[in-house]
Image (cartoon, rainbow, N blue to C red; front, side):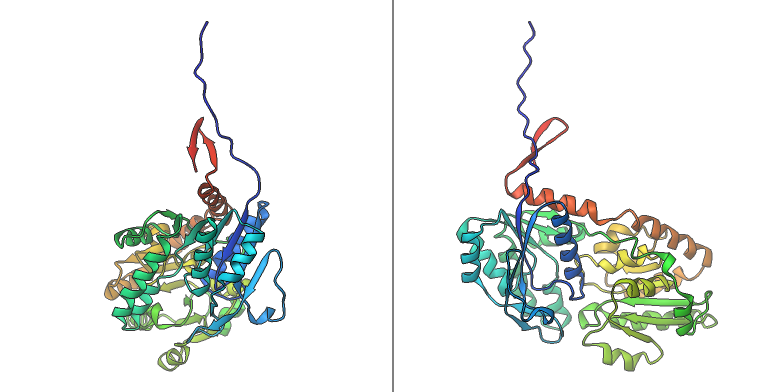
Length: 403
């Protein structure tokens, strides 16, 4: 008689989790972090999880009460960033709430006073914590000429994230950078794009006519916050280089977004069109009506706008880091430059416009690639990571394995 070895299989639970997400920014605020968190929150709820949101009050809900799915706290305006705020430390409120209704796991997305109080409350109660590294605050300090502050910010961020069970970063390049700075227990959670919202079919010739461009002329687009850390001096230099290189080609610089540098840029670029902050279908229409997308930022952890531009069928010029490294194959679906090399960035943009057929192929390839980068797979991965820190197990290829 043959005796078969006993194999113990751990079956992944389908039970819903009680997940608490702590953040100092959330829709309808417009930024990459808020957009990502809105998608994650919506996706987890769609998968049957109980998601509690802890955030500062926004203008739209000053009289709104907290409830089982939402805990509101006070916030302080963030200097230079209208509409954004720090959340007030709320440790005692969180301790009372979580003692009464204990979450299975926390996801702390921001490292300000609210996030810090959540981290401390969770450690006191023994609740598992996953943190998200969404913003390179230490690089922002360098952009403003505060190198000493940059070192202090790095020290604080490392201290903060090393006290969580797992820290999620959005790109491989960001992970390598944080490992070099001795951040521990790093995992990766990329970003997706809504390729039905951002679609080349939304190209609008009437909009292009309002820009004084016909269909054969070039709309050079930039989308983002107009702030010093976004390296917008290179945006100006690169567009002027394109005009000098192709003096017979009609082109227009279209800038979507707002921020503290807008007034300065309007003076320096009097012929550019400033569209202000856009969202939803109007934003998608502007993307699709462009031809080339310039993204000179060096401070991104990811850069959601890169995928949005690719999904809209634009030729993207970016530095070889974050989302661009992950999604752009140089010369196939966009063009890349070595980080910090401004001459190479301008040369890449010039090369992109050198041949109309090559640009057309790259735009098609960009759309094809981005259309496969949906949010459902990202949200499923996030769910697995949250279950993992709760100690749950799943069966993969017949083996018992920790998620």
